[in-house]
Image (cartoon, rainbow, N blue to C red; front, side):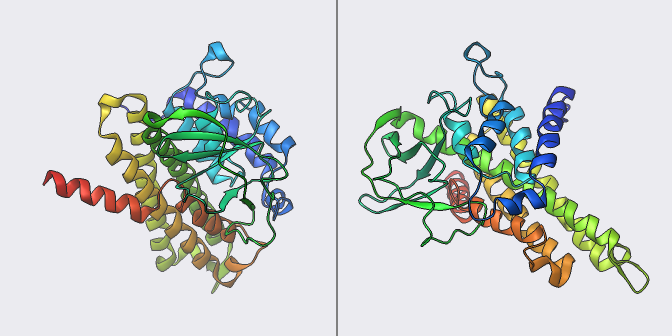
Length: 328
């Protein structure tokens, strides 16, 4: 069986990569620091067809599968594209206007009853999707219910501003209780795909720096200690990528494997790969890696944010261990 991406899937990645390489450069990301994307940026991403990847062609989407979606989201992760990317993909076929970018929806999971809700990109959004035991409620954002990007809240990622939603969780229930597990599984796989992209970008950035930085008259990439670091980064990236595409294949075909195990695996492996590779990228750069003028700190901070999306690596690891114990 051939597990390589098809020419069409690679062309999709190249299409997204060319746009991201032009718009989300290091300088472009620095310009978004502290505020995230605006509506024009979001509309441009929608024009690429990113949020309609899985929407049927008859409804104006591309009608593609989860493998293609993961392939595209890996590229978005590598370029640190900000915004509610995962929620837009999850709700594009459910909420009108999300696929074409005319309505922006962010979201939150695991809300404590009565507690304030901290939401990513609240200032950008038209609505908040709240996942609870009964399904998904879509709450329109108004000036009275949301403070937008709240200056009193310090996000881990400077490209992911957060706001405090204080309004009642009242609105249209767009998905029922039977869809909760599916939404959470798909969200975890998409988040894992973004993390795979970060792991791969960290390897690329570290490799380029190691080839160009000279010490004792030769590039530091010539030193065995640095080579070992880069080799470990490569192995982690490939394992994470394999886990992400395996989970995507099972989402496309439920008979292909155990979805719960695949979802848990991609979040654990991709989360660990992105975290370790981002840290190693900083290590390869030395003291420069910590400065805000360099890419490594963005990679690490975005990993911190994505690590908590749709279950942490620790939570998924515990679930996997419990499942293995129950079948032992």
